[in-house]
Length: 576
Image (tube, rainbow, N blue to C red; front, side, top):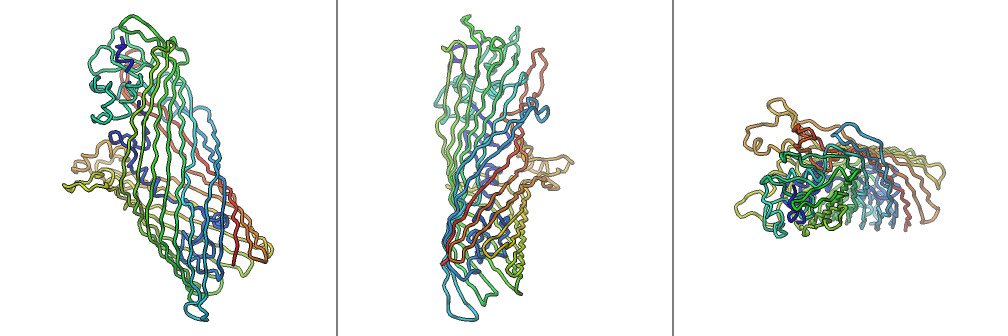
């Protein structure tokens, strides 16, 4: 039977795919988060987006400056632009109660937000010389380089496992007095999610020291084990919000209308919000009847728990680029960007609540707000491009870009006096389980009339994530590495051959452009970004009994998310 006093005193949301629980009461600071913060999905002006952002060799557009700083020197005029837009997140989710199989019907969640992909000013000045330095320009541009907009909802029925039961399993061996003490959030090494789950009433002791049962479980007649006795309706809801924007200070020079060189000082800033909630309810509450030591009985109705995380980032990098016109109609371009030095500040917290048919036993709890700040070094980037213009009829442009994520490094704001690396495990993981991301961008433009143009673009980028073959021939994923870190650190086990995952992110774009005989111009674009399918586990697999007393590992649910992000943007510009 449950201890009613302890049952009235008890949170945990684990992101199994993102390792948010790899450190006690931590925020992010994982390889996956470093990739999220470092990746670029270029936006810019409606013209640059419509051309697939294949702008390394083209230039002449304020959306291109973030890709190649030399682009601002290509045009002999000054310009000012603003690009308002709309993003539409469309995520289709399928739920499976038994690991990565038995997926049920899909659910689609669509959500729309306004954004501002680009705003900028470029000033061009003539030197009066026919050869050598003909013009130089200065620019101030803000280009969006990523959009985190994401909302998903996966749901289904599960009679095998429970998130609340997994909490109880994870708490095995912990001291119950410590679990019940709110001060334990800051005065113990217990994970905050488990502390919040206990204090929110999700599990309690039942007579065996160090053993706990969830309120979604029944205890066997002999009191030796506990199990999920009936069907639960489960719902997982995820949201991501925010964007990354580069504030760019640009200077570029035009030599003889043949060679262009430019320099950027980039100051990226970002705000990223992640929230996760998981809800489970008894389909038949009578299956989840709880008997207390005093003989009183009640039925579990539902429980919910959430995780909230926010990070704010600011960084700095330098970029240099060139464009060369060896012959009329042909342009070749290249640029190099240094690694970005980020300072990242995080906050996070957990919450939990449980409800019964007798509201006296309802309970809820929230953790304190966690805070942490650290440094992150992001990858360097190199871009190469070629473009061919067909007189005044149109153009074709192709880009290739690479970014090496294995150079990512975390660093504490406060150096350890003993010289120890506070992020040794994460930095090892960055070095071995990330590599080079390859991106290809293609764009084409057709001048239909002197005023109107049609555009289309396509781009794809590969995933920088890797897995390895070990010295004993086994596949080693990042999960495996974290779970057996010290064996690899001490060379008991060795990583031998790296392999890349085949995931690709693809974008398709189309747009139109209008250029008046005067100074005004306007461009519009529709772009769709298709992300790789991602599997999410709302809680961990765990060891459990079934109703017949059989013991073994049970697989937690999986939710398969397919994400498309639509962007519609219009650029308004003036030349002068």
